[in-house]
Length: 217
Image 1 (cartoon, rainbow, N blue to C red):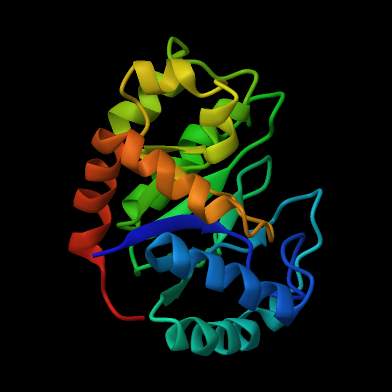
Image 2: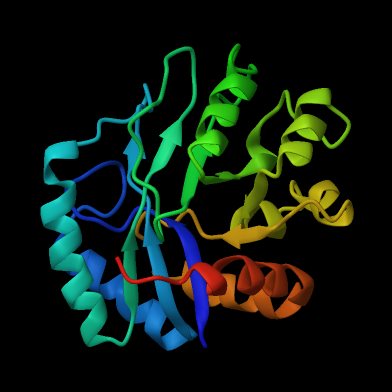
């Protein structure tokens, strides 16, 4: 079993990720060389700062999935759901059970816990993206503690590990997933692979979390 990356923006012409099919293939080849055999495509949904061409998602996923398959990579379709003041009800869960969510960097969404609880009640496993980026969020905040109590999984980015902004989360043992948040960088796959080798405890948690739900979409 190879590595898995659960946070990427590799579908061309969809959001602020890769801008061409050629770039997508180049990045997929980099994943193959770095030892990855599973990648989750997570286009933005509801993000007020990103334009997402939702009508094109399925078609681009089908194309990218075929390209990935030729490289021995299973590409799953998911989404990165922005939770703000609105009600993010329509999501694309990956592996049928997981949903990646993001929030505002500077202020806590008013109904964050309510919306997360709604997703959990639907039987979904919630993964909170790049926790190190949220300036209002910390390992001692009541919201973070409540999210952990509810069973929300915390994800940090490669950059967050490398620049030490995720250090407090790693030291507390609160990071369940390290991912790339790849928007088209062919250098990210080997960097992510190196971190998964370095943080074996996180890699083990990821394997335990995702292998048992590694179903065919």
